[in-house]
Image (cartoon, rainbow, N blue to C red; front, top):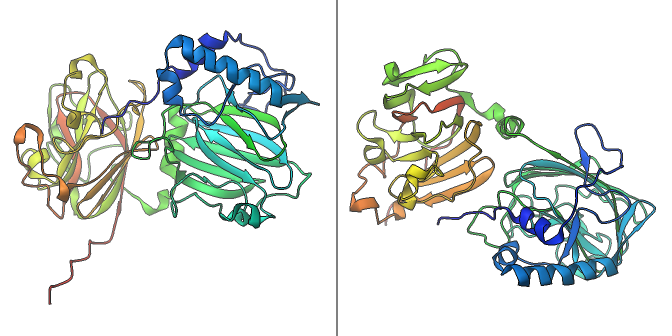
Length: 446
């Protein structure tokens, strides 16, 4: 289950293309910068529908040859007319040399009848664009309009847009896309069409979306024009705030930001500093919210010091080692620190300690605050880190354990939520919880 996202892919592309930075002249909205200079394709390269991981894995000479071929194709089918980026409906896609993590994208497009296009986010298909007036061409819900995450699984949130927001052919359409981890929010012509939906990793549906990736303009089936392409990169503080704000009215705070009222356990081993709960250096033990919970969603922001180690206590009985006596301990760990290089995969950040490994590569830089949401429902646990689902497991199905040490508490139906300090000054803030309905009892055998 270990997954390391593509890294330095943009640097690889830039090295091959030898592109120099250019000051774009387009007037960008406040806080944004242009990705298209309204003159030429500086900052872009060609690539068809191609797994970016496979491109990054190619030997340098073979990769350079492919990029040369794709760029020649790009020059054949893409032009700039009156400040508009125009594709004739054929050829390689236009791909940014840069990669992006959390960002807001503004982009206008105008297309023609029976055309089909889209916008790849983080190198992954796609925000759909197509002819909604001719369902007979596609027969796959095109009549619902553009803006959906078409490559999400059937029935998944975001696959189809909430409303039909396309303008008539000959008119310009405007997208506003907010990407936070894998969480995607899309406005088309000022109408919300996708709200905070997880964008699936088309290339590997068992893994989260890449932590970073390029923006790609897909085209096939008809001319499409693009203009006013602007991006605004979103920092950790803003991203955490946006993620935490979504449906926040459903959550109750567990921490008042001032003192440890409402908490029990090793209270003397924790302190409140600058509005955050911090485990005292050299100390540890369980710090637990006073109320007992069964099914719930917990949200918390945390900040790791270098090499920091802590954990989230899930359905703790209030004593003992929660990794074994409770349902589990979810690791809170500086996974990339050299001293942890040889851990078992089930010991890294977000993992159900000793039982299930989480995907890696989604922690923010040390010293930045991370946002984590944990859903506990019956025997299942889902962990979302900075907008990316890094673990989704049913503990009732776990049969193998680290060091063959059993976890007798893993089937607990309720317990306390909190922190499992391990001597490092890890900090927590904005701790909140939403109770979920009890798990229905299985039907009685007749």
